[in-house]
Length: 436
Image 1 (cartoon, rainbow, N blue to C red):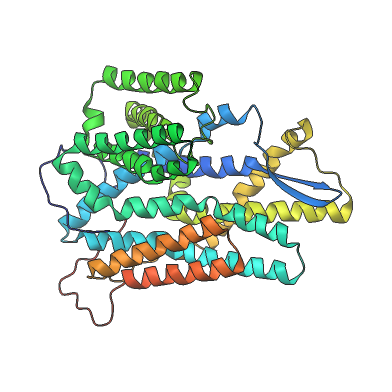
Image 2 (cartoon, rainbow, N blue to C red):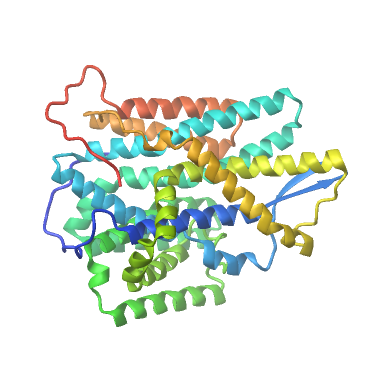
């Protein structure tokens, strides 16, 4: 991995806006909310004669496909990540910062709250083991906790490569995004023709980097500069093509199924979302300045990664407490997807949101404290980024256990250390920087 200073060339000037685009911040906050709601409604717990049973409540249900069309917001999240990341990187360059500064800051912002969460989850799994919780239930909890961490790993990778991808965007914007999009389609084609599903995981890079690259076009003002008719045609065309792939069986109409591994269908979702965002951007920005949306946006923006990292442990704890309550009291839990189960969903969702918010409020400091002085070593930072990614992949592939949590925490700690200036390094005249 090479992290280099991107050359500066002329780029389209975005429309003048405030130092922070509050409309984009609001949409990003809504994306975070959508992820928490989607995962919350998918958690199912019942008690059988064999004991507690934790399942994905959406398996083999009719409602997950239409719901996924509303709550599958990850494509838009990566577009916004590209938008915000590119603008933050350019501001940093204007203050004399480098690509190394940018990546080191991103590593600290993303992995610092992650290492704390991994340590706490590892400790919790150890406690459950000591008190005699069955090993299969602990393994299930560790697996469920690790599943959403794919986002952290991919986002770290995309942000670490952002300076390089930004340089490519400035030299050849259309060639770069076309190459990434083509690669993602080829991966899908090879996966389909070979029958090797594992090939699809290559799109953990190509799909999400393509969507981040689309965010660069939004940051440049190129998308907003298109005529309203052109943007409407782009949205309609993306939706029509997406529907065609569903009807012809190329891709599943369940957009959740298209995320593991990711498919090029998500590129069409990203185009549709980005076009719709551009069409309504001024209206969204006006809405974002109202007191309630502004308060919501401010709360989530400061804690976005903390909320993402903690919502799954909260949901697992809620499921465990529900099962224990049923076992102790003899209360019969409703069957998944039954009328009684749906009747209880509003309370379940409200509780999940409230507990996640309280937890995020308590642990905000791990995400928002100022980053230390960044390293000047490009090789050290590249190694640190790689170690951080290995730690996350370890939890994804092997599952989260006491042992894997300890190893992952050590790797994340090493990543953070390598991203920080060593005592022997000198930093004359290095500009301070902040992350958007």
